[in-house]
Every structure is written in C-alpha cells, then in structure tokens.
Image (cartoon, rainbow, N blue to C red; front, top):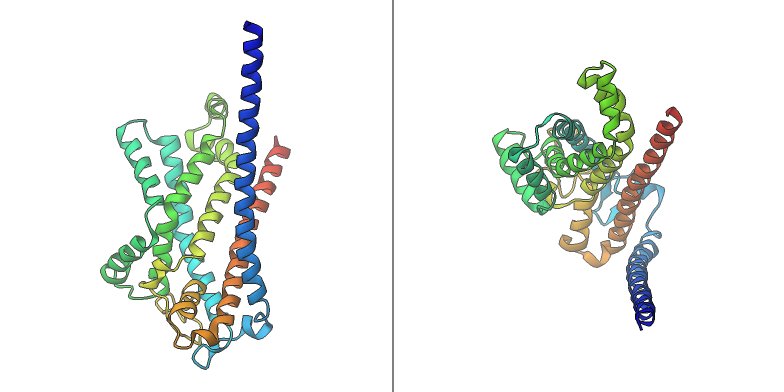
Length: 295
C-alpha cells in the first residue's frame, strides 16, 4: 500500500510538472508570436520609407517629406548627456551602498527608495525635470534639461544593476585583498570592480536603451515639434525620435499622409534600441571572457 501510494504521488507530481512546463512554453510562444507580429508589421510598413535621404536629411514640407536626421542626432545627444549623469553617479552610489555603508535602517530605506523610484512613471520624472532643471536651475527647455531628466530616470536602474553586480563577487576576494595589506579602495578597484564590470555595463546600457525610447520626460523639458537643424548648444531645443514619432502618429494635421514616415521612424527607433541591447550582450561576454582569462 505504501509503495503504491508513493508511486502514485510521483506520477501525480510528474504530470503536474509536465502541465506546468507546457503552460510556461505556451506563454513564451504566445508572447513571441505577438512580439513577432508587431515587429513584422512595423518592418513591413517602415522598410519602404527607409532611404539614405530619410536617414540623412531634415524634415521638410511640414514634416510630410524629408528625413529624420535631426531627430536621430538629438536622440544620440540626449542619451549621451543622460549617461554622463547616471553612469558615474549610479556606480559610485552602488559602490558606497555595497562596500562602505553600514547595514542598518537608513541603508534599507535608501535601497527601498531606489527600487520604488525605478517603478515611478516616466511622466513624473518629466514634471520633476520641468520644476528642477527648466525652472529652478534656469536651463529652460533645452537639451541639457532633457538629458539630466533622463539621467535621473536611468539612475535607479543603474544603481540597482551595479549593486547586484557587486553582490555577485565572492566575499573571499575582499577578505583576501585586505589580508594582503591592500587598502579598502585598492581592494575594491583591483579585485571587486573588474569581475563586476560586465553586470554593471549590462544594466547601464539597458537603462540607456530605455531612456532613448522615452517620450514623456523630454516632452516638457526640451523636445521640439519641428527643427530642421541640429542643436547649437546644450541650451538649445532639439528633435528626438520618440517625440517625433508621437507627433507623427497622433498630433500631425495630416496623419494619413505621414503614417508611412511614422512607421519608418518607429523602425529606426527599434533598431537603435536593439543595437544598444546587443551592445550590452557583446560587452558583457567580452568582459567576462577577459576576466576569466585573467584568472
């Protein structure tokens, strides 16, 4: 009786696992099919618009003709400015929290706050950027204000990713470095940071990829509806791919005419985000391979 019961329990668990695995597989394939349909639709409708003129010329004729070159350059500029704020500040914060800060209530509150900030809607960061950078600091609606707003948006993700990467480094590395007489910073810079760099870079680039595709934070802080020229300084307004796409898809006076241009802009933005994500994967494996060879 007992052996029969055990055997029946094993069979029951086996069938439950099979059902669970098939449920996961069906969910995965459903998501992939939906994503594939969306990507194929954008590619099919956008490839006909892509040309050298579309990628290298400014818009003209009320954005019903021409290209998106100022929007591409503006997106690049604002993402670089966001990186200048988020990357050094985020990594330094992660190092302090993981390596220097004492465990206690204040540290837990800071970590919880950072994780909560990562889930705040981007429009809230946009309104905060208007209040702080546009009005308080007097930057006006500009490339600098938009870049710093996107930097704040990316900062919680950067800090969290960098801290998680630092946690993966074995504690024995730290203990061994200190035992050999190294200072704490020497130990961190030579033994802890190198193996943590792949995870840090992955988090940073994924955060910047998200920032490059955001519309709400730049909507009030510097993005312009139509500028047929490149920004002359950090205090100039600029065009950006997400905002340009938003205007073409929802606000243009002749949406049916510019709809192909909207699909082309969406395709370029998707390719840009895909390249950033691919760069994160390549850098992660390259640094990981270099570190393993160094070991």
